[in-house]
Image (cartoon, rainbow, N blue to C red; front, side, top):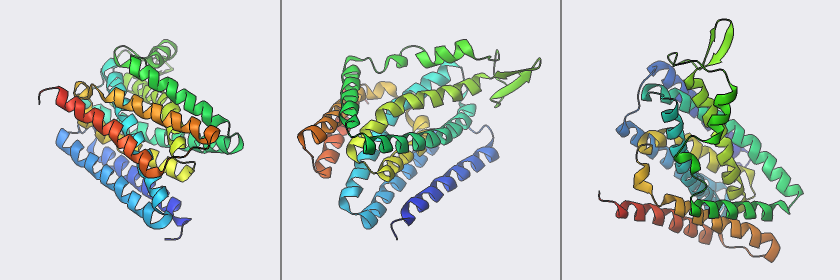
Length: 305
């Protein structure tokens, strides 16, 4: 495949996947995703992401493929934290499972557009101002330390500040209006709780992007690698949510694995430009697998099956 065709092919794939998902959503209405169906879709998205890694290897070489796989693993792991926050949002607004699918699909669509803009803006800034990389690294280290101390997940135990801000400033109906996001009542436009949940999901994704995009920049400066890894993680977020949203307690040590990953990547961002120190892509991938896989394995061993 000619190299310029790969981003075009990926773009067409994303458009086709979203069109399929939206078409199934329209056909099924308020269909509720069952765990077995969610597991099948999660396996499909992970398989597609890994298969795309093989395509990157065949067209762009081993180093780029390793960078893509490392970035995908980091973004997929960070999306686990995002899943638990989305579960909190749906619980806060009492959104029944049959309506959650609709909000998630549209949330994924908005997140893909938002990440595309942020990634290309971020890479353009880094190309022009290379001193930003150590600052990104310092921010990731700060975030990792907060996660070790329990500060990053403050929204998991109570209502996140973003939701409180939106609730205080937007007109909201007193209950759901079916699957509608907005309604006009008494001549005034109101958000329904489902609409507010969608807005909250997009706002929280912006918060998570502040961590995930600098982390991906530390792995590769290539916008194509960063966006494709982000996109596959986001595309699989909907099925991942229905698979593990209720199993947060089973991954009690995951936050420590994510924190160690952010500390490692932050240190790599600082050491690269300042000390001219660069780790081989395979070492970075191995470290991320060790931190994330180790924390998940220890979490599962910690509790009785």
